Length: 141
Image (tube, rainbow, N blue to C red; front, side):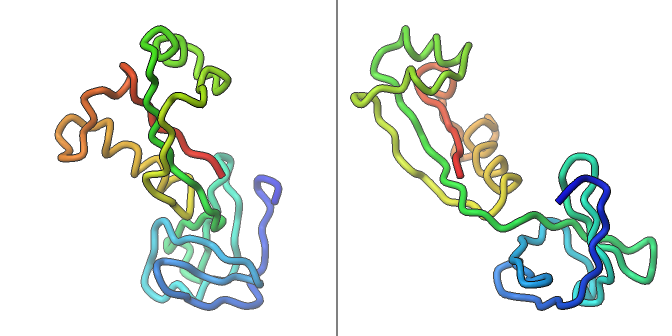
């Protein structure tokens, strides 16, 4: 959907787990509001977020297209390649002998970034001390 385009909502249904069905497509609710099912239009903002609009112009909700995004933890065996990867983020540097494991799956890119930030935050109990040295977190659709 192009930026700035407004879509009239013909059918809206609230699903479980912060999901919503609008005109036959599933979305993930990022910022909800009371009575979200009363939305009249959906607009794509300049940064790609989808914003639901209501009769009350002050009332808004943000949603994102539902996706399946895998979050990977990659541990390099060779520190030199890890340093190169830290600079270039070139996925060709990841070899078969490196450890690549799926640690989680998210429904939107914002959720994926939130999960990764837990490993980057020094105050978090999930903080990874090897982050950026030989361990990196990536996400792919």
